[in-house]
Structures are given as structure tokens and as C-alpha cells.
Figure 1 (cartoon, rainbow, N blue to C red):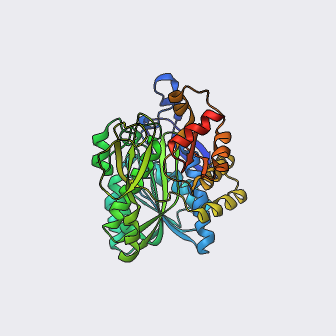
Figure 2 (tube, rainbow, N blue to C red):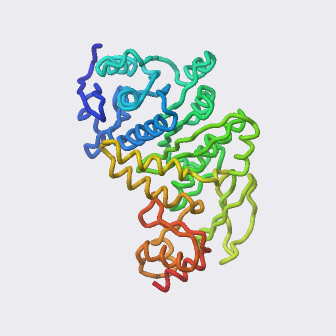
Figure 3 (cartoon, one colour):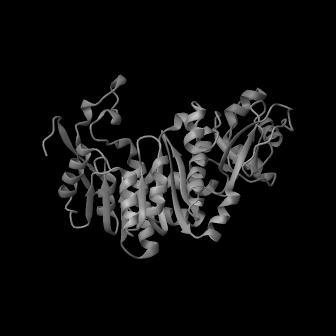
Amino acid sequence: MENSFPVQEVHEGRAKIITPRLDLFRGSGETYRPRLTPVFYNPKMKLNRDLSILLANTINKMLNRDLNICEPLSGTGVMGIRYALECRVKKIVLNDISSIAYQFIKRNVKLNNIEDIAQVYNEDASILLLKLASKKLKFDIIDIDPFGSPVEFIEPALKALRNKGILCVTATDLIPLCGIKSEACERKYLGKPLKSYYCREVALRLLINMINTKALQHSILIEPLISYVYEHYIKTYLRIFRGALKANKALKMRGIIMYCFKCDFRIIVEGMVAYKGKCPYCSGELTYSGPLWIGPIVSRDFCVNMIQNNEELNLETKKKISKLLNTLLEESTLPPTFYNVDYICSKIKKKPPKIRDIIHSLQKLNYEAGPTHIDPKGFKTNAPINVIKDVINEL
């Protein structure tokens, strides 16, 4: 393979990957910009990839067999190659529509000696998934990690997954999902975003609901196993179950958030229809977001398995993953959306107390309360906003 640009070899996990020379693709401030490269590779997504390796190893243990995995948007092939080297894999399909990326993938597959289990394609991701599905080639894991929105790839991926397979979906288009370009979000994700301090959790729930909407059309139930927000992206790992009766359970997982910007009151309403009204605490106007996923975004049992398996693997981001998973476990039983202590204190003219003190005080009053992984100044609780403000005022 001849390149018109310099390349380098990087090591990640057990993989050796040939990439364009990263120091040649910098934007303002001398920061590396992955989107400027002829072949996409983002070293900042290492935690994302480590977590996917951990998940695949957890699935290996649960099923006690080798897995068929597809990564239809491979870039350099780093994720797919790491799956092949660090998990029990029967077959790995790597693909990229870019002819340059295709050449890099083939070179990296050979470099890592996985030609016997790797199949490499140079096709449109959606078309490839549909082709593979039509040939009855079903996968245990399909990893959708595009630059931007994953929306167009969801239905083809659902068709190519086997029953109880895992769909991994990353989204990086947080500008529309967080309400900066509301119309774009509504077009793509079929729901209205909320431009608030907890917009990234809303974004995650909009993403899951979009997947749920497409899954329901094919009589598929989705079960979020691990879902999180990290830096510039959101990610969800979903297990699917085929069958109309199973899928019907997800109808109750769609809802609306009604929110008051004046006093921070919010309420979750099951169903697809928002209502007009006044805030019951301050009589402010209520706005809404949704429809979005109002069910659990983490499976407690699966999260516990991930935490245990993380201790056995020597992943580079092991400590960060442990912190993330333990916080996800803590917040998994708490209601949707979180409160930000600085925001509340700015409203009530109070110096912000420690988050743990707020949580302990709410728990003493028999309310559920705990931290959120999304915001170090955030906490979740089922206490009403007036109780939250009273507790903060007393600290």
C-alpha cells in the first residue's frame, strides 16, 4: 500500500495499528483533529474501545463461546482488530466505505496476523449490513461508531443481529442533541431536546428512544445494559430480544420530561404526548423534551459482571472504567435526570455544599439519592424540588 502522506505505528491494547502520522493533522491550538486525517483514528476514544473490549469479554463468559462481531465503520480497523486479539472471536467483519481506509484495514489485519478470522469489506455500511442479514449471517455484537449521528445505521444493524445480540451505538453529534439545533435533533432522533444543564442525559435518552422506535417497528425489545456520557460522546450497549410480545414491554418506556426553567422543577410523564401547564411550585411555564427513553439505562446485574471482569483484565483505562461503572451502578436505581448543586444554589443565593452531604441528608429523609456519572456537581433523587432546596439551605 502506497500513501501520499506519512504514517506511523501506534499500539493500543494488544493491537499494532498503522495510522496517518497524527502530528501532521492539527487544528487551532495545535490540537490533533481526527476528522482532518484521510483515515479516521481518535486516540481520545480509548476508554470507549476499552469498555467495548470489557463488554465483549463479559459476553464471552456469559455465553461460553466465541463471538461473531461486525464493525461496519472501521476507519483504521483498531476496534475490530482489538476485538479479534483481546476477546474470544470466531469471525470479525471490518468495513469502511473509504477506499483509503479499506487499504489501511487490510494492512492492519495482516500486521496483527488475524487474516484467518477477519473479513474486510469496502462498502456502504448500511448496504453491507443488509447484505449480510439477507445471507442469514447474524452477529453477536455489532459496533456502530460513526463520526456524528448513528441514525441511518440502526435498522440495518438490527436486522443483522441475532436474537439476544448486542448493539453498541456511539453518537458524537451532541450539538443538536443538546438543543443548539433543535430541528436537526427532532428530524434525526424523533424527539425534542432540552437545552439545560442536564441536556447530555436527555441526549442519551433521546438516542435510546430513537433506537427503541426503530426496534419496535421490527417487533424487537431493547434492553440497555450499559449507557453513559463521556466527554464529547454518548454511548449505549443494548441487548435485543425478538418477538412482538416482548417488544410490547418497551411501549411503556417512552415518555416526556416536563421542565420549569424558573425553579428547576421537572416531572417524567409516560406516553408520547406533552401537555401545557404551569409549574406547581412557582407557576412558571413548563416546557417539554421528548419523547425519550424513561426506563433504566443500565442493567444492574450486567454492570456488576462488568465491574468484576474489569478487575481481571489489564486495560489501559481500567481505573477510569472502574470509577465509571461503579457510579453507573449507584445511579442505576435512581430516577431520570439529575440536579446540579451550583445551579440550584445560584437560584437560592446559597454557597454550594458538598454533593455527598446533600445525598446523605436526602437519604436521612427516606428519599432515594445518589451521584451521577455525568456531572461531578450533579446528584439524582426522587425528592421534590422544594425539599431539595430546603435540604441545601440547611447545610
